[in-house]
Length: 147
Length: 147
Ligand SMILES: [Zn+2]
Ligand SMILES: [Zn+2]
Image (cartoon, rainbow over all chains, first blue to last red; front, side):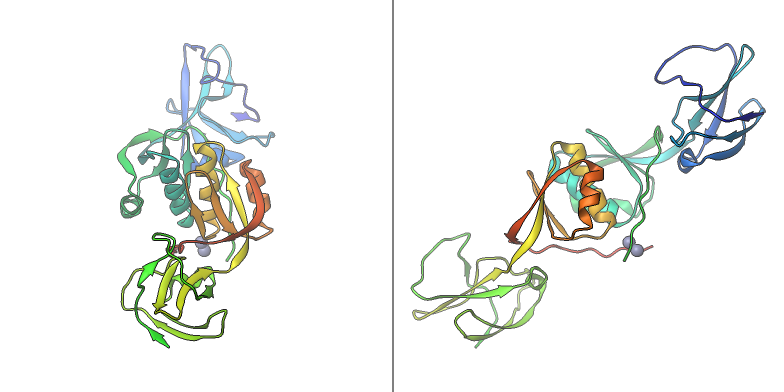
């Protein structure tokens, strides 16, 4: 089936559906406009978005009485970094930027994909972190850089 | 004259001297081990540091009864960035890192060298900043990056 728009979002407006199917995306794929995937129940879906907004976890791309097709990201190995203060936040974020490492920054944490070589960096900054699994819920807007 | 060490620091231990001469360095030069400069009063100085610690503003590299020679940085055009919260700090620092822009991060501000192209970046992050002049007081430890 072909779908061109996001109908609603079940994270923002929770609502049950008797037959929910999931499309699991890589984090990067949230930024794509055109996606071909098979749901966890075997339905082939072609998404070709007309709106510019990136996909988010919970976006419903198809819905009728028989089925609802919803976007989510794959569970990934990540580091969750817990800055103790604003200086640690600044230094950790600067170092991640300096390595062009996509990350999600929020008030209490920074989430980055698992990459063993980051541990040295966290240790140098002196920031606490843990290795765990997460689904990234929003796209990372990567901005290029020049030298 | 040749000097191989830092004797004291007048910012850390304020003390007057009847004849103080200044060596003005670029920010980058604080990290150098070997420096040849002329003071503001015309004394030629060769610095060849044996210790690994970088130079700081206020470091006294020579002192006798007749003169005292002190390091400071040149006044430079800078942006002072004022993050309103920890998320703004993280996002601004990430973007500066992503551009490999040396900066000094403290609890209340980020200081970077003036560079008009940064204004767009600050605006995108939504962080308040002002253009002003500062002497950088400590060296920026730059860490390389790989792609
Ligand atoms: Zn590069
Ligand atoms: Zn780079």
